[in-house]
Image (cartoon, rainbow, N blue to C red; front, side, top):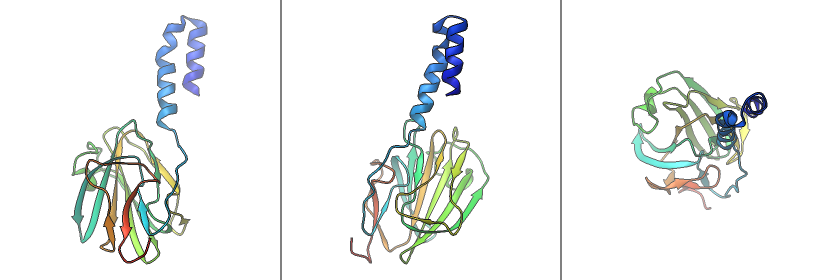
Length: 193
């Protein structure tokens, strides 16, 4: 709103065309920080924590890691992949490498969130990128969350890693686009959906 007000003031004091950059920037910010409602699937599933593109599936320390890259045009509100209790929140300072690069999973600034629910543990990593220098997380250890609940956001291009145990079957593949809160990214093998 400040940018729109500044644009209106500039237009009033000078030429309206000089206000155009502020108005364009204000409209981009409104678009970037949008937070649409999502239909959350039910059953023994994990949902995508963010809008974006699946760029990698790999084994990591006995777990399955799924990586989602968010570009500046994706919704950047983050959601919980599963319902349960926030067990741990660990903030790790680090670099701001390009979020699509493998090294950023370990080296970049990130928020590591452990969620325990229904006999399973899932880890969500909110990872800052080259431009995204601010990670917001609204929950604390002990908070209960439902599948698809809003838990925070990452500002301007970044990535999310989700780590699953072997009781999960990953249902998406690299190159696939996912929608935060709505796209099923994994199914429990030991539970009926």
